[in-house]
Length: 117
Length: 112
Image (tube, rainbow over all chains, first blue to last red; front, side):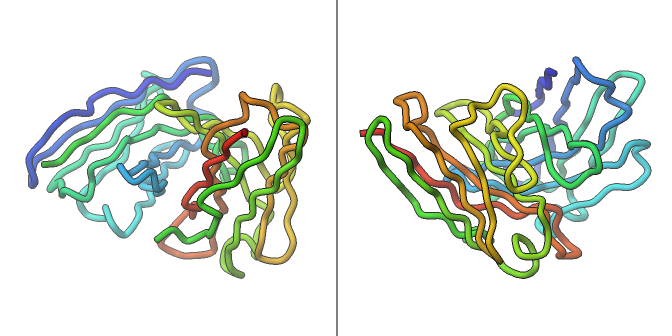
């Protein structure tokens, strides 16, 4: 299993970024996926979750209305569109594969750093 | 402030056993058996070492074990080794309508 995130960077408050996660080593279309972030203080926070077909998404209150999760099963890819970024969104963003029934994760990518300042 | 409470640090000598607690509520740890534990080395991604309270993924040492009592989950590492020095986080699926998972604040394990 491999998950490779990209798209992080340095952005000013109010700016936008689009994160990507390229998946391999498993049948991507058969797994729910999620984004989880880790703040500079090392706290972990669930950000977003998407079902198999991509037609249902869930968001943490802190990002609702600003972030959009999506997936392209043909490209084995997961995305996170982040708009109206805030200083408090500064974190390492991890793409995570969700285990089986959807209640926990079983593999995380190496992460991509997002700095809003 | 994290939803789940873990000690900030624990330490032990090689060969000893240590236990890290993870205190939650009846909305998360107490409500479901979907408690996971993660091991994280500096600059690396968290790795799942325990899932569904006490199950170990393939390849994870049998020295790692998990349990739960009420609203508190625990991770025990037996036969401590220098390579176990890392940060450990717990997580739980939650009944909250606005969250999927809640996490602990992490515990720094030092092997003396």
